[in-house]
Amino acid sequence: QVQLVESGGGLVQAGGSLRLSCAASGLILSRNVMGWFRQAPGKEREFVGATIWSGGSTFYGDSVKGRSTISREDAKNTVYLQLNSLKPEDTAVYYCAADKSYRGRYYREEDYDYWGKGIQVNVSS
Image (cartoon, rainbow, N blue to C red):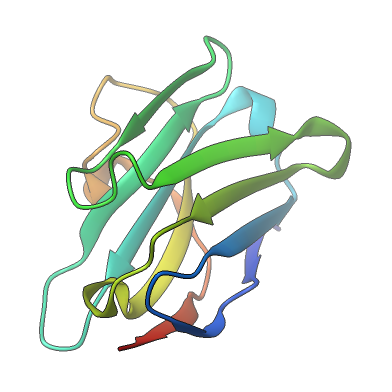
C-alpha cells in the first residue's frame, strides 16, 4: 500500500520560510517523479514543483520560482519542499504526489498516481 505523508506545515509570518516533507512508503521515490501542488481556498490546484528522480532535474511553478527548492533524502525515502520569502498568497493546502511513469508532463496533476492528504500552510501578513 502506497502512502505519502506530508509534514512541516503551519503558520508562518510573511517573509519567513518553511520546509515541507513528504515521506513515502510502499514505493521507492527514486523510481518516480515527485511533485508538489497546492490549492488555495476557492482556487484550482496549482503546480508548485517537481523533481525527476533519475535525471535529477527539478522544475518549479512560476508562482514559487526563485523562492523554493526541492530536495530529497534517499535514505529516508523523503522529498522536501523549501519555501522562502513566503507571502500571504502562498497560503494553501500543499500536496505531494508521485508519478510512476514519467511522460514529460510533470506539471499535470492528472499524470500523478499517488497523492498525500495534504498539509495546511498559512502565511500571515
